[in-house]
Length: 300
Image 1 (cartoon, one colour):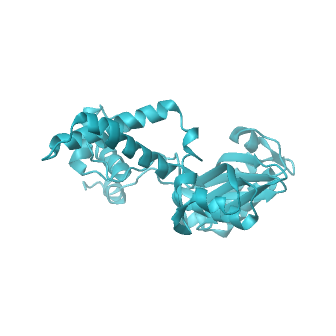
Image 2 (image 1 turned 90 degrees about the vertical axis):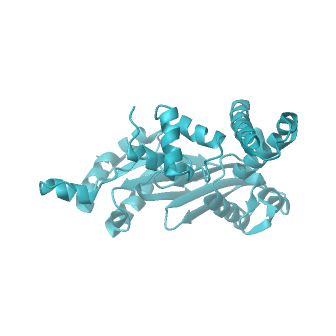
Image 3 (image 1 turned 180 degrees about the vertical axis):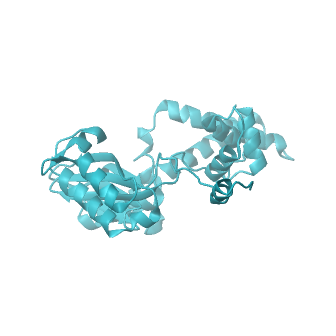
């Protein structure tokens, strides 16, 4: 597979590594993006790793609460301009009203839900024509809690990010604070015990390789036994603390972790959900200068 400028840019956006380093990584891995990320990490070139899902798309995420149920969903459109349009905002709200009481188990079933004799997919299609852009619905899910549990829901930037958390033994203020933290810090797990042995082994190997590469370049290399027994375990522990909710510094008071914050009220996290607009969608990048030149029969 050929290394293209688009692939190099995507890898650079994900890792913040240099352009030439990204090109080398892609060449070394036959343009396999995930392997290229690992290649850069092992060589210590990935400065700020971003999730593969953090690709560009427009639209809004939303939540609707009714009793012990929260509906979360994402509505996508083609431009940020449309996402701010009143008609689009009305459609986002309408979708929530239709689905909060409906029975469905996936996105496809949600689109088949009827309202006033029309399937939701048809309603979205008709509104898309009015809005003037393609509109799509995805990642629809209902989250339920027990009577004794508490929902915390938070919406950032009008719906660019939505987070929902279920807490045991907590009031709504504490729950909303934790939901705000989740929106800001994007944890991947609640706690370390949720991480599979396979994931731990994979990350440990990546960090070991990266550390050995660093050590080989050091003016005063450390014994490999020290690296494997002390340095690598410490780095692995730090890595997982950064992505586990209860171990992260609490957003409203970084002096304590989320676990410590919850301990003040003897609360605990049952589960959480976070949506961010565009996760998992690759948005087509249009070179307008080249497009205009092509239409005019000119070369760029």
